[in-house]
Image 1 (cartoon, rainbow, N blue to C red):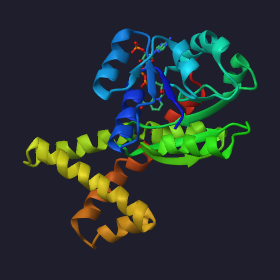
Image 2 (image 1 turned 90 degrees about the vertical axis):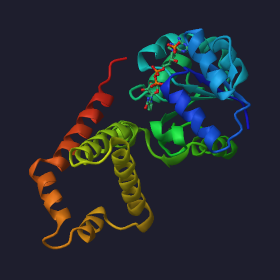
Image 3 (image 1 turned 120 degrees about the vertical axis):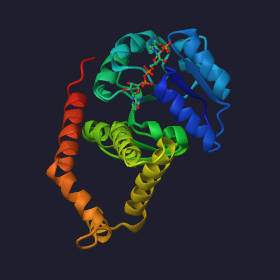
Image 4 (image 1 turned 135 degrees about the vertical axis):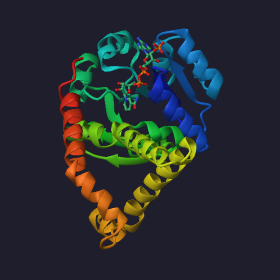
Length: 267
Ligand SMILES: NC(=O)c1ccc[n+]([C@@H]2O[C@H](COP(=O)([O-])OP(=O)(O)OC[C@H]3O[C@@H](n4cnc5c(N)ncnc54)[C@H](OP(=O)(O)O)[C@@H]3O)[C@@H](O)[C@H]2O)c1
């Protein structure tokens, strides 16, 4: 595997590399850099990755370079690395709003830029990443290597760049919605007498199991819901309250808000 560099050593870099370690991916060829020394040094101590001196070292050493920085830092960092970028390199952009066209405008058209939107469950090797390869000609070896990198911390969907804002709302930000749901379920468990930790264990396993049923049976989620609701039973009582309180529309509206924010994010 060619060398992999990370510009940025924050939440997403830590999640990705931790997931790689969990899934036994060889991380000896990974280099990280951050703005401060503290973040990269901590990552290097915790996960045994190589600490780069600066962004120039990342670009000079690594074939695959993750842009794991906030979008408002892109302009500055792209200008900084521009003199050292080589044509056989592949830059992987993780920011929601920065298009490959904007990237190439700053860097030059002959540079290959992949856009990717991972999510935080990468941390436990269960990430979901949407990847869009730009129009560039990737060799099948490069493409396979990129997919292998992303598969080392979860699942991958390859799609056109126009869908990247949707990916932000359906999987990138989705862990937050699910965490709120698990927290609320556990609160209800506590309210009705269960210990807090047991409530979290029960609620999170129920969410994980239900998600696995959707994935593994291929059944429609509505059909699975119907099968849990016996006539005149307890579950349909809960479902009625969720419908009365607008659970579905709250989710749809919140995801639309997320999508619009991703689309119109300031750089
Ligand atoms: N978090 C998520 O769930 C998630 C999911 C998908 C995509 N993303 C995207 O991934 C990107 C990173 O997100 P994050 O959550 O990891 O952000 P973060 O925790 O704030 O980390 C940002 C990192 O960028 C570093 N940085 C800032 N300026 C730099 C420079 N000039 N040179 C090198 N490093 C620099 C910071 O260094 P210091 O630590 O020294 O300040 C920090 O390590 C964002 O664009 C975000 O939208 C995030």
